[in-house]
Structures are given as C-alpha cells and as structure tokens.
Image (cartoon, rainbow, N blue to C red; front, side, top):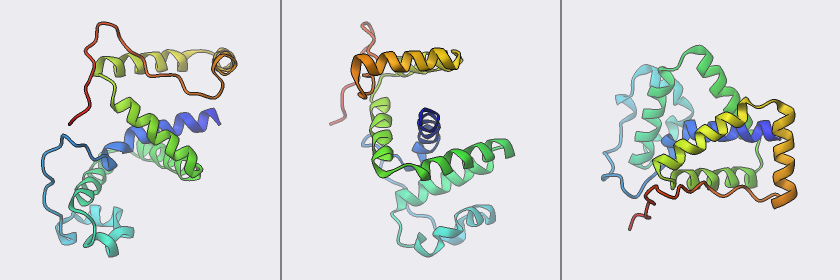
Length: 163
C-alpha cells in the first residue's frame, strides 16, 4: 500500500500540471481544432476525439501540452509513467481524493517549503526498508492514520491565498 501511495503521489506530481487550473493564470487561450493537432498528438488523444469539440478550451490546451510532454519522454520514461498511471487507476475514489488534497496542500507551500519537503522525502527514500517501516509505525503510533502536516519554515515568507 505504501509503495502504491508513493507511486500515486509521483503520478500526481507529474500529471497535475495537465489538469490543474489556477486562479492566478491569465485568461485561457482559445480552443484547439482537432485538425490543428499534429498526427502524433491525434494518435495519443484519439480516445478523446469524439468529445474534443465540446471540451473546454482550457482542457484542450492542457491535454495538447501533456501530449507534447509525452512525446518528449524516452521509452523508459513512458513505461514508468504508464505503470504509475495504471496504479493510479486502481486506486479507490477516496484514495484519489486524498491524494488530490495532499497535492493541493503541496501546491500551497512556499517554494522553500516544497524544496525542503522534497529533500526530506528523498532522504526518507534512501533509508533501508526496515528503517522506513519503523518510522511509519512510529508515526502511526503517535498520530494515528493522520498524514503529517506540511512543513513550515520559521524564516520563510508565507504564501497568502489568492483573492
């Protein structure tokens, strides 16, 4: 389950820009005609062709951009992304929602806080499996199943929510 969670988080971090809509973005660009996509993009997005003309312009833009990112991936990167996406699809709806909330919390962190969290996660990943299991168990014993709060740096400026 913990490996699945880590994979799902990775998938969210990789794919979230394709689905994220932020309040501070400039007005959306106009929609994209299906015929304006490259042949490679149309092949990748073929399952969406029948819905394409009715999609919001923002979604079309995100999907087109995501298809370009996909084209830039190596075969190994594509295999890894497919595996992570497959694991994402196997998650229960409540698990997906929980990961979305965690991702939203991550996005609300300052850049310094995000960097600190990434470094901490990388240090955690470098630990032996037994040590990681011990730390997880210690967390559960102290805090139950509640996820850890996001890190806060004393001297880092706090981000304010956009109005």
